[in-house]
Length: 271
Image 1 (cartoon, rainbow, N blue to C red):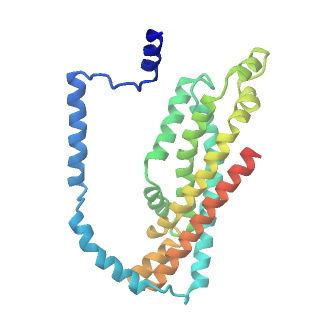
Image 2 (image 1 turned 120 degrees about the vertical axis):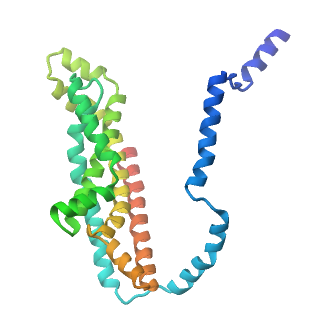
Image 3 (image 1 turned 60 degrees about the horizontal axis):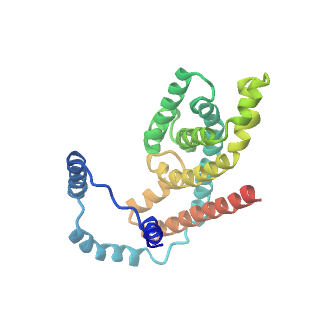
């Protein structure tokens, strides 16, 4: 009985960390030292943060209450910002699907297309959207079209990766059964794999829209349309009340899109 009781107590004890080797301990120490050194490289300073509090309070006191002089113009810029995010996200989602199909491991059976698709998605994902905006401003000129293209490319990188991973995680038995009965591989993907991964597709797409809404605000700083240029001009001319109005409206837009995304995920996925 005591042996059984001791065995049970041992089973309920939390697992202990395994003793690491000397090499692993040295690597951990190097990683920790690099993290500590990174605070210095990043210029982290509690004294500078404390000294900056009065300047922040001065900005807030000068920016409040928000200005209502240009609400109509700012409102149109906010609308343009959301339109950029919406169109760029929708086009990006559509274009990311074929790349995701090619980039899902074992789905098409072509290793060359797999690596090519993964490389394109990685390129689109790793280059910041602000850099893409600069490239498209040079390509198509100033305005919202450049920002929309930048959001589109960024969405392809974001959705392409997660769409591919979602299709890799689904049960392959239904698609394999279809192929065994003579169906084409592409038909099996659209008949079995994509429907099974659709909840993940919807969730990822809604997250992409939320991400694009926040990104589209920044793209205006480089002339890619949206409300960003309005905020930059207000800050450059020290029109802090107008800047505060823009910040409040941006916050309202982002919050509305996030809440809409939460509602849509519950409505579509949970039913």
